[in-house]
Length: 146
Image 1 (cartoon, one colour):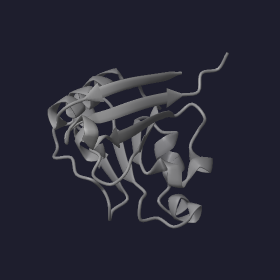
Image 2 (image 1 turned 30 degrees about the vertical axis):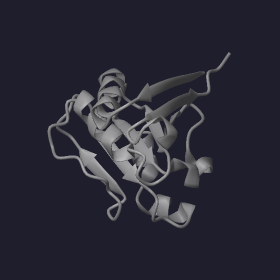
Image 3 (image 1 turned 180 degrees about the horizontal axis):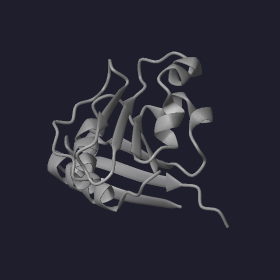
Image 4 (image 1 turned 90 degrees about the vertical axis):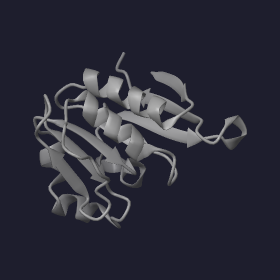
C-alpha cells in the first residue's frame, strides 16, 4: 500500500503527524526517513501530540531513544543516525520497544532495514524547493499481506 500527502508549511506537516498519532495503535512501528532538515522532527512532534503526549518532544540524536509515557500509549522515539552497527541497536534493547506495549517512531530506520519488522509503516519526507521552501511530500508505504 502507498499513500502520498503534500504539505506546504511546518504546521501542515505537524497536523499530518498529529492525525497519524491519533490513529496509531499499540505495537505499531513507524519508520521515518528523509534528508536532514526535511521536517522529520516537526512531523514527530505532531505525531506525539496525536498520541496525547504533553511532554516537550525533542530529537533523541545523542540519547538514541526518548520515552514518553504521558499519552494514551507509551511512545518511543528513536533517532539511530549516529549508530554504526546493529549491535548498538541490540545494546539499547530495541526489541523490548519494538515488541512492547507502545508505539515506536524510528528516524533513519533505513540504516538498519534488517531489524525492522515487515509490517512496519514507512514514511518518507521529501523537500522540493521548486514547489516552495516549506513544501513537503510525505509518502507512506506499508507491506500488506494478501
